[in-house]
Length: 159
Image 1: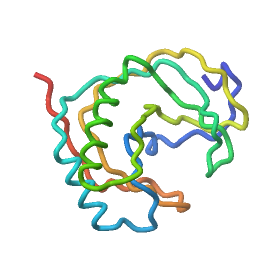
Image 2: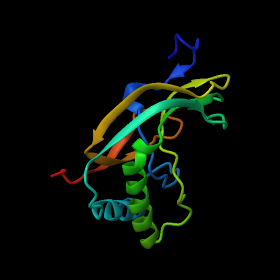
Image 3: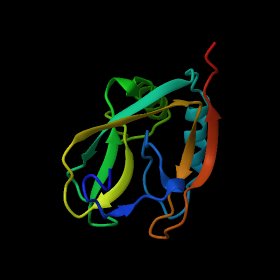
């Protein structure tokens, strides 16, 4: 894709590729009550493992606060229903525990790189896998460190 579209932007490191389901806020440390509530909500999820399928690339219109460039993201349509279901279940449980300001909408995507100029939306060879678990990650603000895994929950095996 980079050769085809002459992209030279900064690629996201493999260990930082992820799909965000919910943003709980930005904190310099992890508030213990937030961690306890997020862990409680996540441990109540009873969804089965599911397949995801990403099949096109687009640029988000808002520039990154970190890089000042446009995020180039891998997206999909019908192949992301499982992610949307997981998001709805998780956000509902978080709201029941008192979380406020959690977005009801989700645009499942994987940010791959950052470009100074927008990239036209286009189809790509499908990327798909089975999601067997989800994790709670801590992003270290302005420290350029790998994410820390604060919790990890398996999804139910498909019978």
